[in-house]
Image (cartoon, rainbow, N blue to C red; front, side):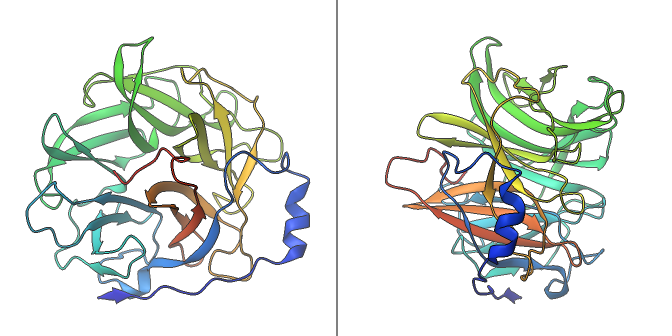
Amino acid sequence: MNINIFSLITLCSSYLFAISIAISGEGPLPKFTFKGIALEGKNLTFAPTGELERASIIKMDGRIANPLGKYYLYYSPHKHAGIGLAYSDSIEGPWTEYRDNPLIEAAAIPDIRWFEETGRFHIWGHRKNSQTEMWTSPDGIHFNYHSVSITAKNIGTRNATYTRTYEYPLEQFGSKYIMLYSGFFEQRGIRCVWLAHSKNGTNWTQLRTPLVEPIEGEGNDLYCPSLLQWQGRKFIVYADHSGYRGGLLKYVEIDNRFTPVGDGGERYVLIDPVPDSPVGNRYRGGEFHREGETIFLYSGASEKPRLIIYATATAVTGEADDEPK
């Protein structure tokens, strides 16, 4: 079934004033503008809890013969109800639901990547909050379970979930891939962004020092981290806890070696919430893709119901490093 895209809704000036005291002014990244809803549970056959929490998108061109569309969008609700698929010939949609969802049962929060080394799609998700697991597939539809990638017990947290994986070599570790994820540090009562690294994308080493910690005004929680590279600089994007288990999408710069910044670093708002729209006051992480001079952001949003939305920013040619995966 096809899901229509809603129109842009203007941000109210009163909310701009309300958040101005919590940020450091205009940041180095371009501002994103909300464009519309990409997926909503009420329009899907597979949406067992009626809510959608995470989207992960991959470009299929050149990877398999006769894909269903140029883009595959993997989605799930917050709870471990399964991972579904929608597809489109445009990154802006509309998205058509795959007829045989779910692809993976009893799992949540997909993160999809293509690995040239294996010639397969690798997807991460979790079936329980204490660990994140990996499945692989030759076609992006039929997945086989592979292994556990990271666990909470390795770093002394309550959870180790909401991962995003990237090919990003770290010379000090001799690694090729990094994984960003969220973990609640019970000893300190804060939810932080954590880093793991890997030589092959299968066996992961988790660093025991948080990469980014919440600062005052962020509600003690950082959710759903991701990486955005821009003009040779590196930024960790995350959702704070100013809304319901999410809120503002913010970012902080890190160095090329991914040295932990802890509760340091200037924090900036990436995209302003749209309170009189389907977004409400809640974003929930983000994934980025570039098409030409447009950077696309896909994020969870809203509380009731939880949705998948998209937003865009304009990049001058050569400025943004992120391309579709």
